[in-house]
Image (cartoon, rainbow, N blue to C red):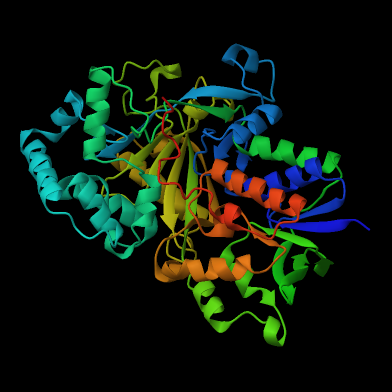
Length: 505
């Protein structure tokens, strides 16, 4: 009898693991249990009346050769002209994202160029300079995110571009958040790094360690990120795997040091399936809460406490279809209809609750039903499940988003809006506060369950990019195929100190 691997979750990590297992072994039966009715997790693409929405904006960029080869195998990169006649392709996109602060656009990340100083004005420029000098001369202990940002950028820039946005994103002040999140997301980025980058370009100096946060080009599926995961799902079924949608996992039964079965709810009631291996991309919080064992096999109370205290931030987005944008394209970049060229914009205006704006036309013209005559926007809000935003009706949320678009100067009035659509995503962002400081204890416990492999963003409670989630799946499959119970490689993905999007010189 074949051994059985039960994969919890059909996001990038779960689907990659299932595909790799089926590709590398003929002796393992693979069953995927997905709680929703779609594939892709937070990387899904929602199709609303022919206009497609990307949940968060997913660039396909990686310095990992295996990941790039994997993407190329499923969706090859093609020139725009070829893409018009072929649906299953990746497009090459120009990465443009800026910060909107005080009604002015700034580069993301901040660059020290003439336009930046013009936007600042003389007084603010001097404050930024002296503030950074102060940070250089007096370093704060980096025991929280605020101190990390102040040390890297000075207090003035921190207050302008990091403090409010971070609090809006996480619902906590940066002083309450672990510094490791900042180190992971802005590896190597600081004013000194910006200066080094600027002068390196001027002097034609190439430095392999210069952070770019910020590769200038990336690949993107013609019809959004969900396209590649839908194709992966089709391949998995062709290879003999099973995908069970609307199957919400509620329990994992333990015997000794092993997981032996997985329980889940379906539209037809409760079911349970035996498991020789469990690959989990569900949230660690829910995984541990659902673990069942008797006597010595029961989850220790301290482990339950840590898992139960892990925080998340949820996500809401409003698709807004408009006739035109009021805000002008003042760049040299040519776009259809001369709309602003940004893929997404970080909104750091304290007068709105919106966190980011996506312009789907710029991700792929094929996301928009009428790309020539309409602009399809995604307004992103960071929320907590059950809060006032989460509980808004679609009409209320739509009214909020439109009002804030008008306030930011993107449109003139509600008359410019042709249609809207709301989407919600639970546990979109694992957060680095509360019991996260004790995460190592949880990792040690979960690693001790021989046949359990935690992968992906929520599976590891780590703010992974999509490629990192895939690599955790690669490593888990290597362990299963080789018979190894050492999970260190699985858990060490995306812990390197050098930024995962550095240019390779």
